[in-house]
Figure: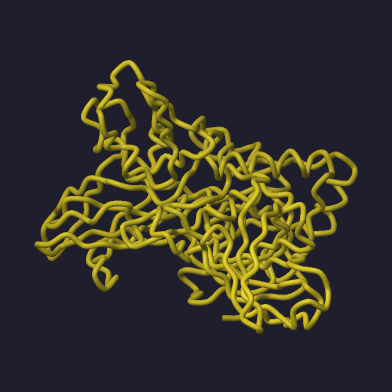
Length: 427
């Protein structure tokens, strides 16, 4: 089987293309029916998880023209920003960049990534700036008041990632878990959506490159280069999209034991050009390797696969309010990395638009209100078979499936026009 990009694009335009999500491919493989997969023209793939290399580029008016020469410092909702690169001399406008991993000045569970979601939700934010003359200016605005609000990445959408454990005899704080890693191999965290991941479906980057149109947090965007620390084994990309059309449920803050992380979501169309791509698309989670690494220096100490951490039945955490003990201090509220737990008097509620099914609540609630099979991983470390419980998932397949389903619908209605890459990406 061999097709060209133009042939597939013409079928889409004529309303005759067959489009499947990577999740639908999984279901068809489970049923033993491969015929629909083999006749598919496009597979929509996706991933959602914590991705450090995410930042915003914002531009807005801060004062009337001519009053201040330029602004040299700024923060939004207490999150420090980097002003520039344009000085906007005497214009009263300010350009700035905010990193998703930057913490607020007040020491709260708030950072750049939480600010991004607040902006996308249309909330009003507080801006503080200092001019070159030393004058301090404060104002309030929302994203609709910004002439530019772009989200960019330096490295996002890794081809899956790694699992981490702590072999030492002491707790270890890391960006890969909301709580300190317990000592002695007593907890494993992992990142990656397994066979759903875009670069698991196209590991050779045959269809994905510079100029490929994607959904970035639900907003149409583009890949513009290979990401930093990219490799053949772990490719990742630089991308950009408009924040004003993003979906807040696909993004936001994720507070870890070592500071804020940034949640982002990608959906990428994979045109099925040949049999080699088709074979990659039909791979199962159990065939996708997952390295187990020492969290202290990230060197590999074991091996497992995504079939052990994603079994198809444990992707969503369920909240049972009838089991709630009405604790005076809610342990889960304190450690929930996305602040998805809402408390109103004696009533506890989970905001599903914020919950990313990380699972840290399951072991933290004394009333056992939260349910979900997090699973265990069997791996061989130094010649010994060790079973390690999963204590946190840094990726959310529910969000990934939602975004790839959205992309499929947009392609079928011709709202989203697929683009052929203009160039390969170089490491």
